Image 1 (spheres, rainbow, N blue to C red):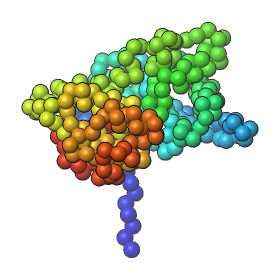
Image 2 (spheres, one colour; image 1 turned 90 degrees about the horizontal axis):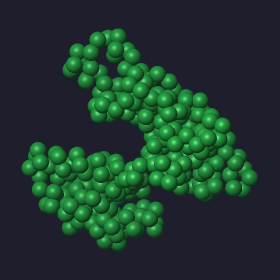
Image 3 (cartoon, rainbow, N blue to C red; image 1 turned 90 degrees about the vertical axis):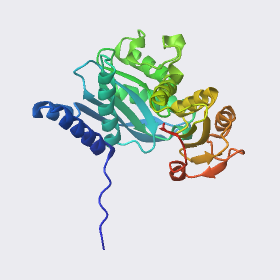
Length: 298
């Protein structure tokens, strides 16, 4: 019986991409050795008291890939399938993104293996504060500056800032320890939709290069969180026909175009785009095979 080849991990893919780029620019071996590995990997297992008085143990990660350009910069995600390999890959990609844009930051990333949708607001706060306490030895405005990512938001950043300030700075607020916090705590206006808006800026430039009329373009978006839903809304406002979107539960398709404001409202009400009445239900795999002019893996 044939034995299936092991699936390549996300970190293996990231390293492979790096090696290909390093070959193209003739990067010397000493630098390759430094840049293909992560500088620091922290794994924490921490208890959290639940609303019913029980205690559950969660696993979290924080990784620094490279800090040559400055403090580590990268988001924190809450997802039941987060792994160390995934966080390492994302940290490496953050290094390249900051370098390409000329930002004075290195690459970092973090995550907790949890489905936040199964937690109450109080449990989510307890988890966030405990995770922050465990990784606080790495954090700081000049060391490591987290940000929102999958299933995290300005409120979670506020809890991180408050916990870090209490434990590491004598209770004096340190706004610079995180980005993506509420504007009332010193956050940047427009941050919530910045990622999705950046995607649309890139699409507008690509459309000029490839002579794509965005008012006639068919768009498919894999992922309908903050970035995906924002990109969908902005493209809808530009006149594009968003024909398919998906989230973790599945996707929806309407060849005539989806009413994106209505889809966003439906997801807020139900927790998923699946079941939206004006569309056909499809799988995430089927979504990627839909005919389209623009595909956004958000």
